[in-house]
Length: 422
Image (cartoon, rainbow, N blue to C red; front, top):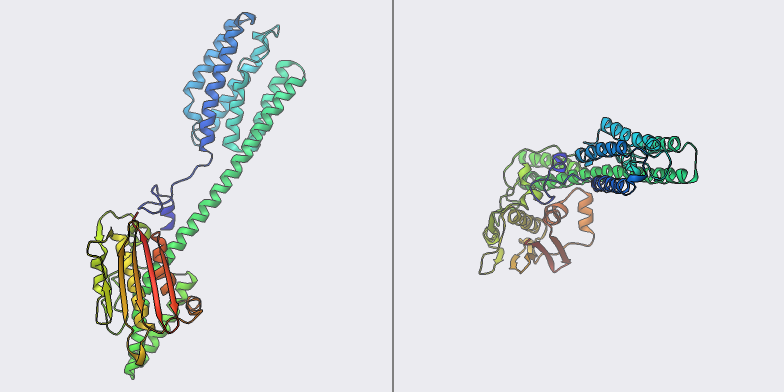
């Protein structure tokens, strides 16, 4: 699933995935422009020195063929896939033929540059982009040998030009190889990130459904005693085993399930949460365009010991985002019901405040329980209890928002959830 999303064409926050990258593509575009510019330069030099050539007609025929070849093969040098080995061989042959023909066209060496002039560096650069620095070195060697044959001796200008082309092409080939390695490394990192996010999403869904059911069965069974106590013990063992799977990241693929059950002995009704199916991931729901009034989802939590304060106007978010926000609120209230018992063993009082700000929606969940002891959240995460880490903070992080938890021992706990509207 994560690999499919990585290969998609959409953005990370929408229904697709990560766009396929190509670090070297701008270099191919630059090579296309280079071939056109250097061809123009060769034609201008030939026209300017036309009368100085011994056989200008033969030179014109060659440059005419070179012009046709260059214009017809522009698409060939637009990407590595189109730039095939047979094309590279033919392209290099055109350049070498021009170099070796130059002594016959300019027998008195009045003009100086070879017929293709600096155009011949184009095939060498194509070899560099296609095969890396080793191919570039081989192509440069061929051009160097052709220039030495054309001059009849190893001269300083010839050696200078050959070394310049060789160094430039080898450097570009090496840069391309490094860029390709970096691109593959980044792709692997994105795959790992996508897989991690998928595991976290599945862990949230498991926490919101299966783990809450097992915890409830364990509590009820222990309270009832008898055979129910044995059933509760078995449910507790399964809960521990499942939490171990969740925390270690080895999670079996989960099928479609219903929403989470009521996580406490009474109180508010839980809001249905998407679980298991690929369409229910936070990354996909963030791209929904159907708007939903958050007040409608959160009002279901109102109960005898849960107060809900809302604005007078609708608070609209994309439906997927609203459902994930409501699920995070449901997880926060479930923590209140299970862990924040009030004085005398009574269930703690909880308050939900919904605020509609210009750029974001803010939901605050506060209770008057005993608060969370210092270090308890870190210990719970180490034990595989991911209620806050995944069901609350993980959800808000995937939505591009934030979740802040403030707890003072003896004074209750406050969870502030912020979701951007865009």
